[in-house]
Amino acid sequence: TNEPNWKTVGFNDAAWSSGPGLFGFETASLPAPGIQTPWLNSTTAENHITYYARKTFNYTGTGTGVTISVDQILDDGAVYFLNGAELGRSGVDTGQHWKTTASATVTDATEATGLFNKVTGGSLTLNNGTNVLAVEVHQTSNSSSDCVFGARFSISVPGGGGLLINEVLPAGPGAGFVEFFNPTGSPINLNNYYLSDSPGNLTRFRIAQSIN
Image (cartoon, rainbow, N blue to C red):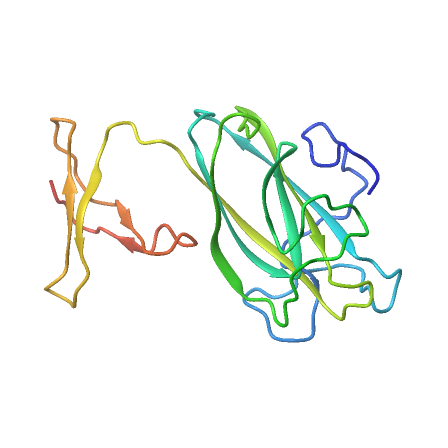
């Protein structure tokens, strides 16, 4: 696209096609849920190199010191923007334009977690209200036989002086432990708190009993 504002909140994307991810075209097996919204196949149509995607979302809370992370399923390269500012890139060199080919070659797309962990501040802003995550996906050539894109966008707000994980001992059942530190001076019940070892699944383990 030659429209410089496509990655900003105010851009009118009403004429764009929409649908759920994953996006693209691929004959090989993919992580679930597979291709849900097809993109124009560059081997049979207009020899596309770059595809553009946007997702608006609402946020309420502090805008500074917020950690933003991205997980992705990608073939071949992508550049991510938050409210017009670059958030990070994968497999695309700087100075890209709509005909820039990806600098990475992906055979079969797999899930990559924790791709970026950026903290808001300076030009990287998170608005109270409407925000937009915008992505341009690049292929290695205009005759590439596949293109895949899907992303998970996570926001972690700064702690407010509450519960902290103090120590972890990984071990088998009955031997390992997680030690919590409560600096607040008031009891905190851990019932319905969650623990996880995966940034893509923050509710993996639920504490299902009252622990004070």
